[in-house]
Image 1: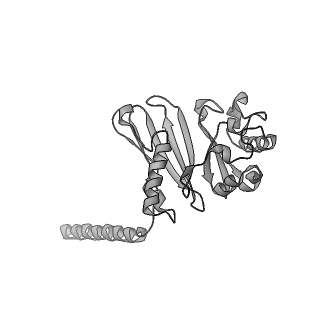
Image 2: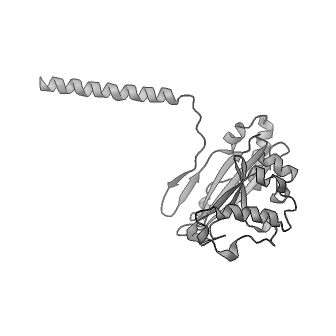
Image 3: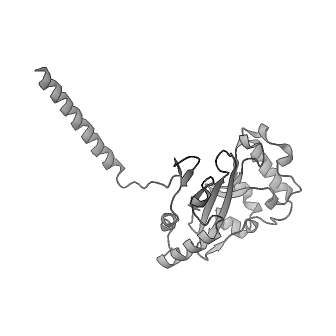
Length: 237
């Protein structure tokens, strides 16, 4: 009798798990997952950074037909420092990652390449790119800001204001912070797209010791708008 009871309990448990899996699959059906960066270790000191596909990203932008998509892939990969590859086998101790995102209207594509210093190194550098998907061209940082190659005390004040809000500000090295007499392009940041703002990122070791990591701030569009060229406004609107 006990054996029969145990068998029925096990059978009921099996059906409960089975139907739970079916229900979970049904709930997730139709949902689109955003490409996520994953890190997988393969071998000693070798890390592959897997990121979203450029093709999948371009498919998410309206009004890009097959021919233009092919041209964009060739142009974008050719412009990237590491040719859009997320891993180089010939440099087994160096690691690379590529991340793709586009702005609200889908015309401008943001591509970020992350380069790690290799096995045993904490160095991390980022190369950022902005591409116009309609005219198929690279948008340089200089074309984002008004008088980008000249000092702008007002812009400097805004940047310092938001850096001060960072909880790790006490770790900054004062002489490494942007200076009012520096041109905007000398501040050493890379650009990234942020909702309702302009993202500025400094690599680790740029504003503080390597151990402090990278620093990011987002300048509200309403405050940064007056420092943008028309191209900058189109990119970040």
